Image (tube, rainbow, N blue to C red; front, side, top):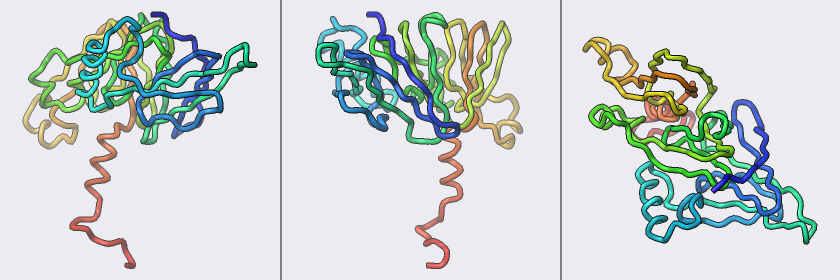
Length: 253
């Protein structure tokens, strides 16, 4: 199934959203709860599966949706369609999406980077109908279980636009045979041609006192890598660390 050809614009700087412009009968799929606003003429429906395979039966859709639950996402995806048509003065309509925490939206044309990317399990935001959303497991199961982020990944494939969300600022790097090591939570996505693994930090002193965690993600090969400056897990850990203990009240109460 070919992906719908959608137009878009990214709004904002530090807390971005993406506005999708749909022609009559065009559809965009998104994670449940990601929608910010939509114009009159757009309808939405929660469906089991991503809609990439119209011939897939109920059990096939249930199996695909069940795999998504392993990533902590909803069993359903929301499909937004411009229901106007040329016979009823149909025109372009807009719908906008944003993630539940501050950061940047990365627009990726899958057709231009080989047809697929692999991304962190919670980074997918929305995509043109026809994009297949699956899961991928890190090959090194042992380090994956203890490495936290990076064990279960999402795999997006198709020939249209896909949008992923990253915390803070996004850096795009092109690897040409080099190796890059980073905190497992800082990885957003990588294209085909990149080998990905999770490795334990070397040395007991660095492991326990270096402050960088027990594991690092290692990427090497030829392709693109997207990195985020502020993973949500790091932000959440810092908030919890400095939260009032034992139900303490705010100052002055």
